[in-house]
Length: 348
Ligand code: UDP
Image 1 (cartoon, rainbow, N blue to C red):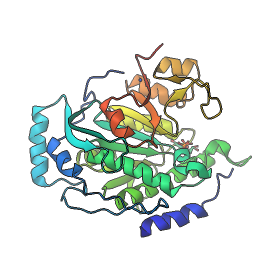
Image 2 (image 1 turned 180 degrees about the horizontal axis):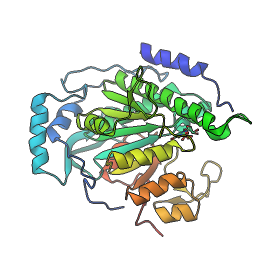
Image 3 (image 1 turned 90 degrees about the vertical axis):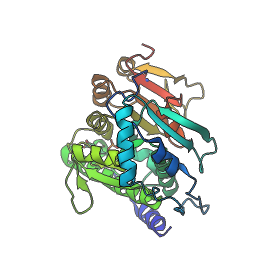
């Protein structure tokens, strides 16, 4: 609660911006998850005390696992199960509870995408404010990640920074590379805010930055990041690729490949890719499936070409979906149709 009111102050003080298909299950060698871990973690120990202004949640821990770290016994049992099952990630849980209005009540869920790279843009975090971070949106995104994490998914998150600063829209005359470094620092602010919100929900996480800043985060180390995922920690990547002239979409595609993620989930404010802006045109047509090629040829605004090319070359499907709808991350990981899928077998 205190944390979120601090977040509230911080974001209010923030300045405006100056200036889709069937892959083999567990395709990229991600370890399957223990159902027992998830059963225990899914017990409704999380109590929503939303205070009406989007700033507070309290959590009641009745399970030793709720903090996200399995016991040694759990890990050993998990390892045995991994040896037995290299193909399927089966999770027994109640997805959606206690937050979801559209909860999926099911047992023995099989994830199509057990290891997820989730990209959250700064724009999504700013909500309707037009700049900075909207605490209620930040909370919502954190809850969505927490729910997916408790349901057994491995989650790596790349955050954007466009809600604070974008190199491309820097003040006239500013060196582009210099401006891009400012943009990368902006992503670190979002990464730390997200970590704080997750911590508030009892979810263990690590921030790794592509530009070293050891006082606030770990430097990016690929193997260590993978280890965190295996040890049931959410990993948040900040500072993009660490290089100017790139975007966080490209950083996310790169990290997805490096993490051997099964899917790149692009969390947005709309429920998929449209042929024109659905906010402006009521007749906008939504695509259910697209090919990487179609995205490039038709210049569809899914992500920049470098990012889509990286996904194509590494055979990583991209899911574009609305992160504001409860339970969508889990549903998407189950392979449900929650937005637009971009992959090598799309419509064209
Ligand atoms: N950026 C960069 N290199 C990277 C990632 C990001 O230079 O690898 C800079 C770039 O200036 C970009 C800004 O950081 O505009 C914020 O990232 P982005 O625009 O991708 O954020 P989003 O649109 O997702 O909020």
